[in-house]
Length: 175
Image (cartoon, rainbow, N blue to C red; front, side, top):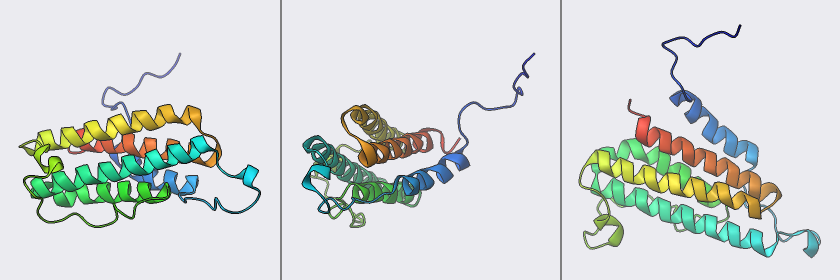
């Protein structure tokens, strides 16, 4: 007869597990853009890999902009969101980008900027908006795994898992 779970046992991963797994998964995946110019031209990444990598860079940089907009509009969340934002910057760098995303968020956003206008008016909704962006991107990256091979597939999987951890932290992290 199998053991029944404790009535106090929570389902799902623990917050500490998620925080520990994210950076470790990226380290194991070898978060580098790779040396694409070495070796035989036939050994290099395919055109599909180049497109997937460019899309991943763009997506990560756009997500950094979302974090920057929320941090600028909701300064009370800045200290809590900065580590997640920095993870997203590292994701962009791992895909070969990140030059645009590397700058730290500006202390004030222009009220006329589109990303600042899109930030909800309270902390809870702002976090939910970020969680939604992270969830959509993690899902898109998981689906992109089918079209790429090797190291890029492992990197996409790692970053998608880190995005899922971000969603958890943004939605359940304070519970």
